[in-house]
Image (cartoon, rainbow, N blue to C red; front, side, top):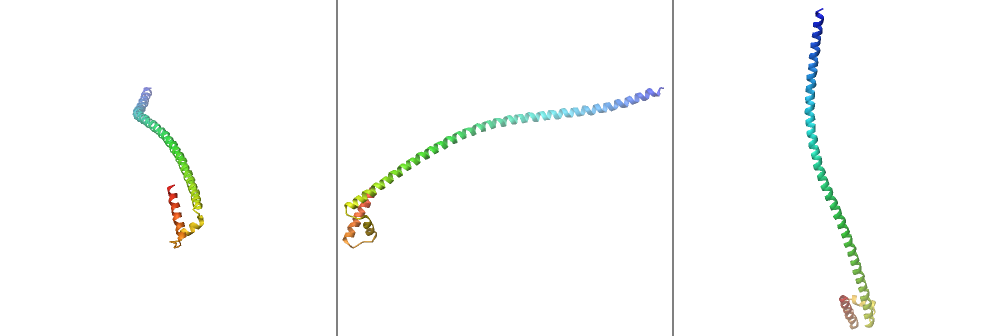
Length: 153
């Protein structure tokens, strides 16, 4: 009879020793988990700080990009305006020169007719080098005068 309670006590002791070992293992695991949690929280704080810093940099770069885009749009508009103005100016200059050339051509023809020179005939005679004939020399001189007058326009 006395063996039964002793066996039961020994059995309880073994069971309690196992529970103590399990409790110690759980205590060590809990301590390790707490340490990992603290390390993880530190990393999280660091990453939050990095994120906030990167977000500030991103916002600054975004503002700078928007300003650059606005400046670029203004510059492109200004260049397009200058291009249009230049094109209009060149077109006006071209029209003026064309009108001047036409006017000079008309004046040349009028001058040649008033001098009694046939335009095709005078060009043909001027193309021949140093003509001996007196008439051809006179036509060449008249033609040179007309060319000088043209240059003045």
